[in-house]
Amino acid sequence: MGLDDKIKNAAEKITGQAKEAYGDATDNDRLRAEGQADQSTADIKNAGENVKDAFKK
Image (cartoon, rainbow, N blue to C red; front, side, top):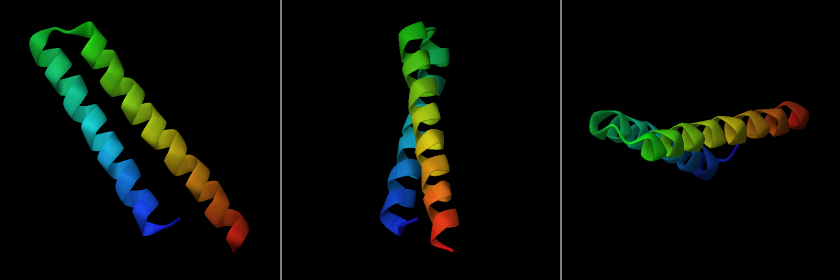
């Protein structure tokens, strides 16, 4: 996994966490759901990169 990919995925996960927290604080279900979706997307991307790394070994 490239360092760029790790940084992008981490940033996407942090953004998702911030959106979810802001949605919780403002009782905004749409923003909360967007934050959860962003986090899930980042996790899936990380899993895909880990699979690629496993096959490179």
